[in-house]
Image (cartoon, rainbow, N blue to C red):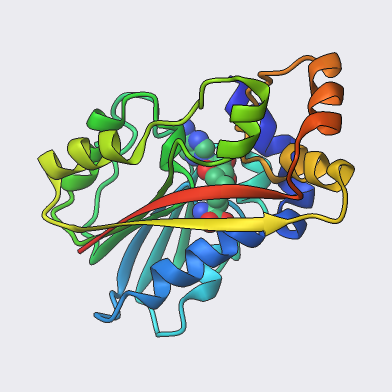
Length: 226
Ligand SMILES: C[S@@+](CC[C@H](N)C(=O)[O-])C[C@H]1O[C@@H](n2cnc3c(N)ncnc32)[C@H](O)[C@@H]1O
């Protein structure tokens, strides 16, 4: 499974290269006003969501399928770290316990069957705070390389989400500027945003580095909150 390999590989450098994901976490957590006590974090990584929470918690359940990411998550008696793959049938369905809020930041774009994952999240009958990268991420880069985006478009995700959640939807675009094309391509490699899908050969990457006319990358994130 390539996505797993990519996140495990980038676990050591993830913290250095996750500026956009940190902005996403800050926005997601900043919009929560009900101070939920029991939280499930799906695709928790090294714990950005947990670290951003500034109120007392009763219990935090952190789920991720990358052992190396999960090993960097804070631990305490009030935290359960769960090594599990949300793409495997029944992973979410088998999680017992009631939650006051389900959070997922920058992970569900890798859901193979997003409709099924949304249904499983909705079955917890808890409010949600979900942030999902969508198809205009790396828009200019894809255009320059004449490639189709690999992520779902926000309209498609909103249509699916509306079946399961009575929520507020917001699409936010971020840009990140780089000092050189080399820095930009290193970021793509190290940040884990590509999810391990190598869509360009070495030669194509080299050409794209020479031809890409901008010094920035775009990121498009859909926030689903209620
Ligand atoms: C971009 S990181 C985000 C981590 C964290 N939520 C944050 O905001 O910093 C995406 C995380 O999702 C996890 N992930 C991706 N696909 C997954 C899957 N199928 N099951 C469980 N975790 C998954 C990766 O291992 C990675 O830790």
